[in-house]
Length: 306
Length: 248
Image (tube, rainbow over all chains, first blue to last red; front, side):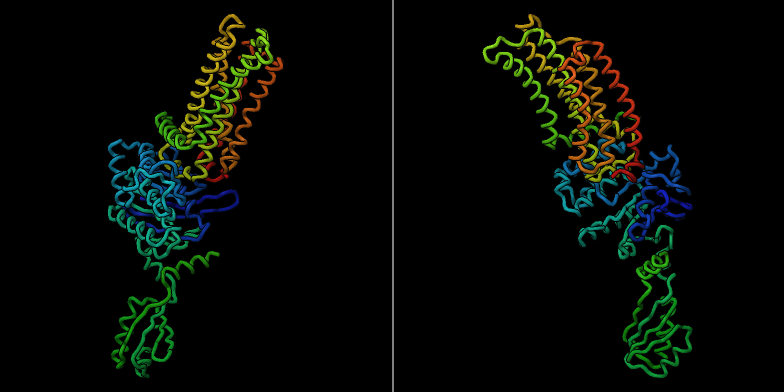
């Protein structure tokens, strides 16, 4: 479990992270969204005991961030994939992982087992003796992920793991994160990629120095008004419009045989709308919900913060 | 502090150095050149134009000063390696994942220090052995005895050379926090050998008689004090918070 209460970090006059309070449950994939400079990396660095907090509290499991005695224990139970892979280019993939395995006090047998396991899972086993410097960006990113797992941590921090990767590599990394999710690891995922967050994360937080919102994708989408249901009819009639006026929906815009209706909660209201149209003798060809996606929620919250 | 962690880091650096030819050349070739060149100079220059070699009085002034070449090397070679070891990690951006491991700043710093200290010291002492053997061979006739080994050479090689190498490593930790280019770090880093070059010149000019044991011990004492001061500064510079937020 990761928990912060009013976590704050200042660099001189600049407040990089302002009173962030959040809680990530065990086995949860937590998406941390925000624009560049929002404080995502600073938050991760504080949680990984790499930099100190200015104020507030944070805990990883039973250990307290900021307590010198707990820092080494925290670093032992977490894994970090930083935004820059930071591999040793002249060393082979195997030697890169072996070095980190030793620093995490893994026995030789554990190192051998985990190196083979993760390199095979990430499709790098055949390249184990090749210098990391010759790897493509995608391969380097996979190797950095394997490195963060070499000691089998239950908590993993990933800072933009798919940034700058081609679609195929991004997908491999995303699929691997989903595999880790199945293993019930707790994953704290910093990302710009809304689609990725939506697909992978159980809970999402939007940060712009301050925490703007936190919840599931659905909760965040619902938090923003302005969603619309677009209904394509075979033939629009006055009876249909009259039936819709009786419903507690927002504005109904007409464009030929297409209706665009403002709704607060399409998941709940669309059934009643469609039923009213059918009772009024209408034939529905398609129903589409537009607007107020996670992207809308994200953009609205980030703009509000400016 | 766990020495085992520092040794793991040093071992990794040794492995990295083996793949870098420029580092191998610096560690091995430079001490070898000095070790062969100086006896050749004594032999060749002494017998130039049919002369019968340097007089014994001149030889016993020259040889202690020549030993100081190894002090200059002790400033130069660890500097080259430490620059690569620290700024190289910065360039490869590998410091953050390293700092995220359950390792203390002191353990990392010591590991980097060991990596930059042991290979040059081994090469310098190896080179110095060759130098002393060859020098004895070319000067024994004139002196009537073997000049090396002697206590003064032992003080230079086993006390002053390690202290100079430590100074070089510490200086480079400080330099590494300010630059992000290995070559720039090396260029600034080797400035640490200037005082040793100055001592050598002063010895040659007989301003500081380098054959006098007390003089050597005084210089060693000054080196020790400077080492302790630089250790304090290097330790303050090499803190993970500083590295991640202030290092360029």
